Amino acid sequence: MQTDHPVVSRAQWEIAREALLRREKELTRAHDALARERLALPWVKVDKPYRFQGAGGSLELAELFQGRSQLIVYHFMFGPDWEEGCVGCSFLADHMDSAAMHLRQHDVTVVAVSRAPLAKLDAFKRRMGWSFPWYSSEGSDFNFDLQATTPKADGSMEENSGASAFFRDPDGEIFHTYSSFARGVERLAGAYNYLDFAPLGRNEKGPHFNLGDWVRHHDRYDDAPARACHACG
Image (cartoon, rainbow, N blue to C red; front, side):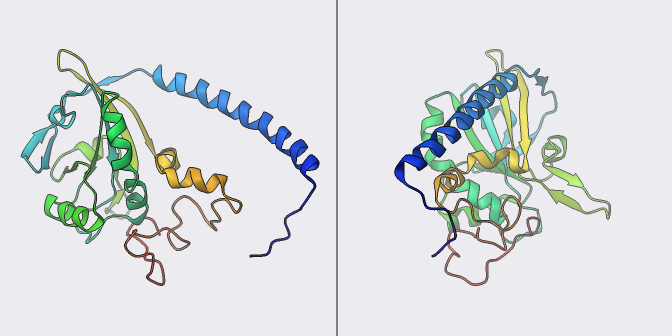
């Protein structure tokens, strides 16, 4: 692929790289400061008895922690009447299993939750080859209370991709500590971090998870054209 990108000497490149490095360090320090503010956010006690469906039957929110003190729930967009999961959420979910083995050693459990019936989640999970825990919140207020599902003007429901964090103290009390949606969770998709290093970057024509551009279910990259999901495009 030919481009009209400027080509300079090594010495000129070093000068430009040094200037960018100063900006990168500023961003790193700002990111660290923001992380400290995130940790300082007040918590909300979770009093509602949410129920989920998993491989072991009906479970309480406390059981999703799997004996650990910290829980991250990925709000995977998969509506009750959908036949497959969101393409963008699937892209992010492809990164979950590799991270989970390390997070478990840091007292963190990571799971996915969707409103689709458990049978649909299990079937799609097998198709994609994932092993992370995936629970159905069908019939529960969980998605609505966490704003992972929100009503639209026409009365239908909109599924939102995001993540929520929870803490369980030694007495068993559970607290909601943080949530982020849309581009706020794209940092969980490690492939984007690689692309930000690549010569052509993300090379996208639109916003986060522009599915008509390049992201697909990983078993459909040989298909043409790309398939859009219900809510992403």
